Amino acid sequence: MTHGFDLLVIGTGTAGATVAYSLRKAGWTVAIADKRPFGGTCALRGCDPKKVLVGAADLVDWYQRMRHRGIAGEHAHVDWPELMRFKRTFTDPVPEDRERGFQGAGIATFHGSARFVDPRTIQVDDQTLTGRHIVIAAGASPRTLGIPGEEHLTTSEQFLDLDTLPRRIVFVGGGYIAAEFAHITARAGVEARIVHRGLRPLEGFDPDLVAQWKEATQDAGIALELGATVQAVERQADRLIVLARRGGETHMWETDLVVHAAGRVPEIDKLDLARGNVQFNRRGVIVNDHLQSVSNPAVYAGGDSGATGGLRLTPVAGYDGEVIAANLLEGNHRRPDYRMVPTVVFSIPPLAAIGLQEDAARREGLRFTVKYGDTSEWYSSRRVGNKYSGYKVLIEEETEHILGAHVLGPHADDVINLFALAMRLGARASDVRHVLYAYPSVSGDVSYMV
Image (cartoon, rainbow, N blue to C red; front, side, top):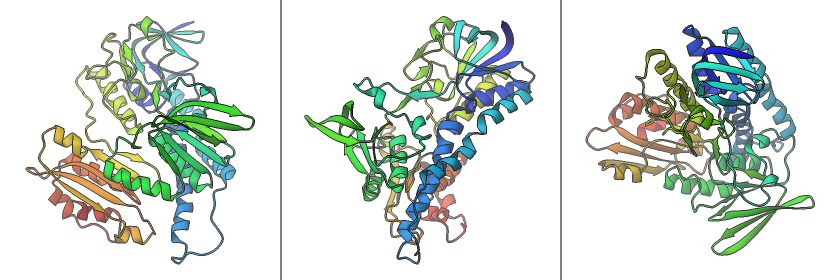
């Protein structure tokens, strides 16, 4: 059966839902399709369920930090099966709620794998859908590593649905996923190990704060194996063996679970994009400044699916959806601006950043002052027993504008939003410094960072 619409959306995550609701509200006929349960990565198998686990791990860590500082009693610990039951109270209702929301708004819903038939037509299982426009917002999936034994890897999505935790886990990769999951499992009593081919983990973050983060990570009992490229994963009876190459030598680690944390790629390989005349590369659908396909003007792409300059973050996906919706409704006039987007590694403690790092600012020829300090002896860290915290802020000399801000420590995930607000509004460092903040509060420390 063939159905005709003004707009077809592939993917029910943040980007796709934003476009679908906006265009339907404007009176367009809209259909949305997904091969997975409705809701997208963040709500079902990403940031939202992860943050539930982080909350529990943080509580256990806080208890351990405050022992002999006025806190006594039985040892706090993570009950993983109970924690997963709690997590599912957030994730289980999402697919039905999301579909009910779409249908209540008058958006037609389709379940199944979508693929292009021609530039304005997609096939979803046995349903043929045609549209004046098509939006690709299909999310991401773990990238293929191409190593022997790859089938033994547990994906980050599978990890977030584990009913029990093994005694030992190796995380392959040194980015957000490995950092966050290793910190969670370490607080749950797991022997966690991060194996990363680079010499520095969290390569997108300030190197000085990452150095502090590494100390905090090792202090939590997490092994960091840097400069080690995983060559293979082997199963031997009830255990797994991770083989890696480092410095010309082969290293071997025995473990119970190996988690793929070595990056994700746009999930577009099964869409038959060539039949839709949609050009793409390894970063996603190739789009112009308006998030429109460079080869098929009927198609737009955003979120994890578009080869844009934006970080692969939920707020960015929603922002992409807003830009695409505006351009579809009013003609191409909006261009996304990804320069001031905060990002956070939800480890313990969290590491947050926005704007430029020192090297990038120098490459741009900017003249700036660096405010950098270790805040582990500041009151806000000492009162919660935190040993690892710091900041680095780049301030342009001529304008006093904040070029970049980097924060490690308790509530860094909230503090970075103050910098985001200041940078978005073009506030000067002196403006930020002279705000009367609530005291004592971690956000009040911002006045001493600028």
